[in-house]
Amino acid sequence: MASIQNAATTFDFLAVNCVPESHVWTEQKDYPVVPESAGNDAVPVVDMERDTDGAIATVAQAAEEWGGFLLVGHGVPIELLVRVEEQIKCLLARPAPDKERAARGGEFKNGYGMPPYALYFSKLMWSEGYTFSAANVRSEFRRIWPDGGDEYIRFCDVMEEFHKEMRSLGEKVLDMFYKALGLSADHIAGGEVERQIRDMMTATMRLNMYPKCPEPERAIGLAAHTDSVFFTFIMQSLVPGLQLLRRGPDRIASASPWLTLSARPKDMKVAQLDTAIHPGSKAMFRVVTWPEYMVAREKTFWNDGSALTMLRVTEDEGDAQLA
Image 1 (tube, helix red, strand yellow):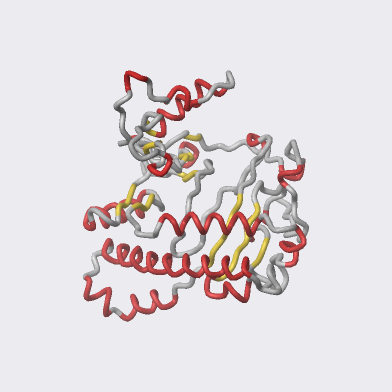
Image 2 (tube, one colour):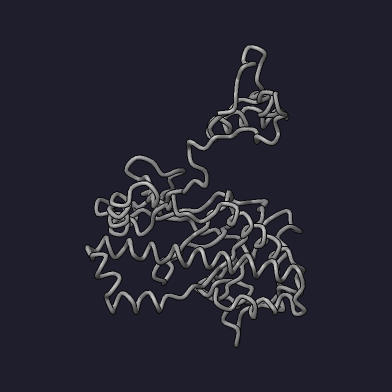
């Protein structure tokens, strides 16, 4: 397939009301798609907080059978993840000339633009992003903010804080892999090979943004690919669409499904914030799980109704409290 060049010209995704030919993906996928992982196809969940031995066993099984897992109980502060996402949005909302000035290509291996594997496709993807070495944040982003300033400092501070947290998490996950291989704590701490692997670990960060698409069935955010690194952490936002190819010994390749990974746990509760309830008052809306909220939203979507109206506490439920 013919490749395309990583052009420095930006594409204004929000200025179009249809997908242009340059971004249309018409190839039919041979793999079936499962809307959400469940049953035997439920993506393994590794909880680093509750059950260390169980988590290590799950890591071993996931590595052998899946090549990926959902990580919870990791200890990275949620408020930091929120700030990281805010900074990504601010960066990629910069004017086109700023982003073009920082385009990757030629002598610049990092910067704004498509990842290298995207260059081997004849079509463009419905996303934009920035790749950089986590160890060189401040020098790299002088290309965006040549004169520095508050936005530059704020962005770099958040990315460096995020890198510090992810570096620590990466070492913990690496130790879990070692233990899954049967290595003792003493061996992990004192082994020369283990030390060298830990010392050689470097972090590359890729900040992706997936703008709203007017015809999502005709476009693709990122094409199917395999990351060629030791392991990849994906900070999944509430934008849906992340999929994982499920292969197993009981399936031929063409029967392996793409599993859609939900960004929201099924038991996640939707409720009013405590700060939105006046002292001495009771909640105006019932507490529901995310699937229950989505059912209410679907019922009201086509008649210009409000899901909140369906969830409002009635007089008979006047004693309802936030769970």
